[in-house]
Length: 415
Image 1 (cartoon, rainbow, N blue to C red):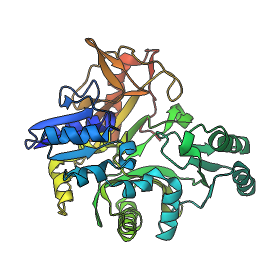
Image 2 (cartoon, rainbow, N blue to C red):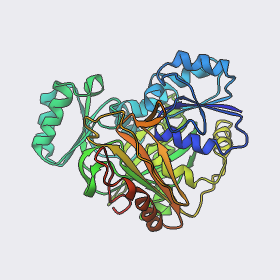
Image 3 (cartoon, rainbow, N blue to C red):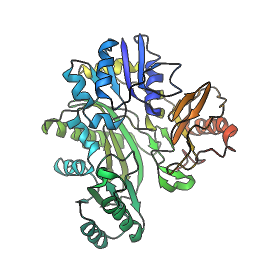
């Protein structure tokens, strides 16, 4: 088969790495891709938001399956357009992707279908939001309604932080239109985990759970990021927790979307938290998580192409998972998630057995591989236990720990 992957980050490189193993893949393309994908796929210089260009390429190259990675083209209706052109695509429609595209829609949806989540209120006026915060107290969570590259969530521990977040979003328009509506919700204490599933309409096939680390610096300090590392599976999440989450969260979401006339096909991601009263939803994503994908897919024994095709055909892909642990640690540009330089030559990383590198923000500049984003690489390892996998990744990262142009957390997989 000729297969196209849309996107340029670590999540897409991880999908490329798995599909490259399939004997059924004849030609593997990625648009636009990054500097690290060229060994396994043909990079096509079409922006992920150029839906017309992607449709034209899919026709020209006789693409038989397209997988869409990032959230932005999903919310622009890329799946709708591909379907209208008779092209097979593994991705939710614009209508189904609204579950990620609008926090207020998602919260109203969860309330309607009795999916466990934090109490909340939605605002467009700063004064009303501030009055609600005064009434509720802190800690409290403020979220931009729309897509904000994983940065539109503020966990405010003081009233000053909360009020400042409201002003940033509703008054200063820090997130442009994405923050013109905000959701203010109850802070849920507990340990977070991610549970992704392959979904087609009302059929839900869960993956192994993962946990990512959002804060930029050690000990969960610093600003929120798109994720500084992840591991899977999660030792403190039991089979009972997973069963509850599938039945009362993922399945209810799939059924609810069917009932709303927004049938879902693609990856449904539950960003969950284990509270004293059980798992609750922090957020839904409508695509593979990043960096969770980079540690979940290496544990999948199935041919990933077969999984995509089976799910699209309404068949049970009968997922089989390795009895092992996988961990990945992000090498980020100095300054991330704030301002950072691009075009820095990436140091050579010497891998060990069962370790790997996933490229996220990289590009080729002449003969050199250089940085092209905040999260540059993910260094991962798969071993029998989380402890041995973690130890191996940090051994690999020893060669870059004194780099001043890049940084990484030293406590991924510990908490």
